[in-house]
Each structure stands twice: as structure tokens, then as C-alpha cells.
Length: 568
Image (tube, rainbow, N blue to C red; front, side):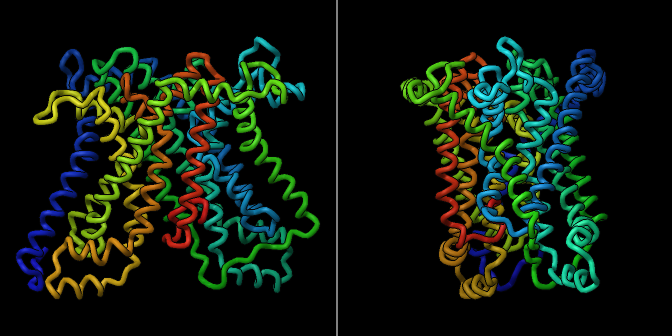
């Protein structure tokens, strides 16, 4: 890029320094760990053959079984996500139903509930001691295995968890259609059913398909649900196989699990490539005009409302009621009445120093990661939007890497990158710092995207005028950019805290004694058979996330469109 003659030497020097700092951040946290993982996976085998390690792992029976299970469960979950997400988007996006805001919040609730808590809620709902199904005589007989511990159980729950991805995509496509299409069809004599089947559905289905492919990419990297259901159900998937190998043999098998991680990366990238292809080939431009207004459902409205509430009760309300009931029970299997209801599980949990430490660690990690990402996001956006350096465009793309690939892959990359004694920093493996580094890499896009959107909406003449008067980069960022992007910056940081506070995928591989997190504690308590304590910790963590979400929602009027998923 040619030097701008309007810039003085100190101004150019300040911008060069900022570019260097952003480069070090992205290269150190995103590029180097993932590159280290790829180098390990492509290493020689025990006999010294080139690519021998990859050949050994790919030829193993356990790998083939885990890969088949991953593809089967993820494919099944996509079918669940498509049916639920598309059906709910059609019902709430096309018709003027009462209580649409509450319906939408419940549809999107899996975005707020961590996967391990969702799995735990369904375990409590479908087990023989279910506080919801047993009084109705619908629970499995005592002593039988919970049916949710199976491949189809994993597919069902991953389908429910990733259903909002389909819902958001299809609902956005429906609401973006021009209302003139419907009016023209009505003038031509088409009825409501024909308008939906022949006009609206064909235009919205590519978006639903793209959402389904995104749900597949999320499913192949899911760890919480396969860990809680697949390990006891003897249904190994790639993410749980990586966890079990590292948990059993330690870093000595890092090369083998790096190959498994490469399979996850390949599946996720293939899915994202297919999604881009679907959107490019199948999406139909619908033109512009007044937005589509909700249709009158007439006599069918009550039936549609009842059907939507029945589905939401089954997938969102009943599982959480079962989890809450278990948390309020004195012991697993005791029928919950007013006389047996107790808060003892909560008091016992918060009297446990390890659980208290897990809450403190999770809050400290999530807040520290969000704050540091916010500090970097402002100069990043300044260089990307105001200065427009080409290298920053490349770094912007690379910064998304740890968010796009599965969390298990990121955790393994961090182990490989920071395991050996390194100059100045030594080894970070087994420390609180490696968790923070992984959180910084993973959640940076959550903070950066809203800030970039807000910066992109600014009038560039303000920065141009300041630059012509000789203002340096720090002054332009502090006086012009930072005040304008502050709401988006706050929202991005709170989204990162809300997502990171219950994180499990990274923490499961990186935690160490004294550095437990909430997600790890829920997983450990359930694994030990202490279901009531696990339920109490889960309920408390969900309440914490809902509190953050409510606070975040207050910022909605000041945020760029699309920042909050439940406001889209």
C-alpha cells in the first residue's frame, strides 16, 4: 500500500505499531496454535513413514466407529433441527399469534442454556425417577437404563440445541420477503395455503437449508451432550474420543488426537463450504418493498397456537422443570411435594469450596477474556474500518478461526502450542493462564463482530477530518471511534461473558486442580452420580446467564441490528 502523503511520520508510526500489536495478538492466539496442531497431525508415524501418524489413526477401528457415530448423530440432529426450526419459524413468522415474543424467547432458549445443562435436564426428565413423567405414569420402569443414553438421544438433544440456527435463518428470510408478493398472489385469486406452499416456502427454504448445514457444523464439534449421554451409553463420538484419549494417556497421545481433531476441522469446513454454495446457488432474490405483514390465521389460529405451545412445552419447559424439581428434591427419586421441597442442595453446593471456586474461576475467566478482547477490538476495528490496511483484512478473517472450528480442536491446539517450555513464558499447560488464552482466542469474534458493525455504520468524514488536522491514532480512537462503538462494545463483551461463563468444551481438556470451572463441575458431579448437586449448580448457572441476558437486553435500542440473536 502506498504511503498516504497526508499523514505525518508520527501518525504513520502509530498506525504501524497498532498493526504490529494486532498481528501479534492474532498470530499468537489463533494462527500459531492451530498451525501447531496441523503440523502435529501431518507428522511421521512410529516407523518414520511420512504421514504415518495419520495413516495409523485413520486406520484404527475406534476412529472409524467414532467417525460413523459422529456423522450419524449429527445427521440425525440436522433432521430434528430442520423440522423444529422450520416449523416454528413458519408458525411464528407468518401468522399473527398471541404471545409471539414469549414463543420466540423459548425457541431461542437453547442458545442461553449450555449443552451440559440441557443434557442434564433431559436425563432428569426421561429417567425412571423423573419428577415430571413418574406422577403421570409415563416414566420408564425402575432399574431400566435411561433411553436418552443412546445415539438417537444424542441426535435428538443436539437437534434441539442447534434448532435456533435454522429458526433464525428461516425467520429472517420470511420477514425479509416483500409483502407485495402476497398481495399480488391474492389479487390473482390464490388462497392462504397456496401462497405459503407455492410462494413463501420456496423462497425461504434455501435459508432453512443453510441453517441446517450450520447446525451440522455445530453438531460435529459438540462435546457437552455426547459427553453426558454418549460416554455412559457407550456411544463414542470424535469429541468424546479425543477427551477420553487425553484424559487417559495425557499429552503423550497429542499426535494421535491431533489427527482426530483434523477430521473435525475437515467436517466443519466442508459444512461451511457447502453452506456458502447453497446460499450462492439456491437463494432467490425476492426484490424490495414493504416488509411482509403477518397473515391472519382465522379459525386455525387457536390450533396453531396450541401446537406451538405444545412443542415448546416438550422441548423447553418440561426439561427445565424436571431439572429444577431435581434440584429442589431432598434426594433422587423422592417425590416432590410441598413437604419435601428443600433448598438444601443449593446450600450444600455453595458450602462446597470447590464449587464456589468453580463459580469464581468461571466469572474471572469470562470477565477477563471479555475485557481483554474489548481492549483489542477497538484498535482492530479502527485499523479495519478507518485505516483499511489490507493486512488487517486478512487478520480479521484469521481471528474467526478458533470460533469456527470445534472447541475441542482449539483446546488441543492450545495444549500443543503451550505445552513445551517456551522462551520467557515457560509451559502454560495445567495453569489458569492456558484457560484464559483459550478463552481469548475462542470468544474474540463475539466482541469484535458487533464493534466492526458499529464502526462500519459511522461517517468516515469525522476520522478523515481529525487525521487531516494531524490527530494521532490514539486520539482518533479515543475521541471519535470509542464513544461511537461503546454500546456495541459493551454488548459484545456481555455476550462473551454470557457464553464463556458456562463453557465446557475448552475447559474439559484444559482445567487442572484449583482451576475448575462451572461446566467442569456440572460434568464431574453428574459423572460421580451426584445428580441433585449437579442439578442445583446447573440451575444456579442458568439463573446467572439469564440475569446477564436481561441486562444485555436493556442495551438493545443502542445496538446494531443483529447483535442480539433474540432481537433479530
